[in-house]
Length: 193
Image (tube, rainbow, N blue to C red; front, side):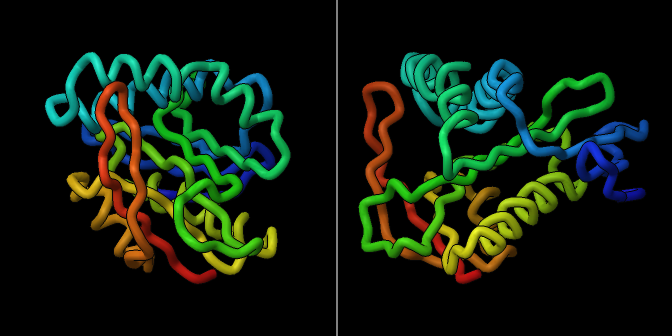
């Protein structure tokens, strides 16, 4: 990160995104008009993360349902959800995070909250953008009175596992996770707030 600051529109990072030129990334709270942008970056980051790992038909089916604009539109209008989007100058989305009520098959309390998604295009990894998205989610969860943040992650996503470990997440259980016709046995991680 070359520079970071808060503005009325959100958190602004100036970073070098895997190229030699400076890229300004703004992270802001989402509003109801962001469903299409979230769907675009949701599909792009899911494909980028799992291409070659998961079957193409399963990825396509999953993205049609789980990363379609209707999914994000529903979350944006549902109480208990917070969404953030990371955008470069001009508004193109490059990452996002979704915080919401827990929907995991393990014992939880009313003070638990789930980080349902946090994704960033690979070009922006290692530049502080993912760390800032995580910080936004952690702060919002704590401010909302949560005592623990939970998340599910594919156990073959080693980069994500390392990222979560750096942020204090540890094993809390497992969950089945459906992608197209396949069911995976994902890890559930948690950290106190």
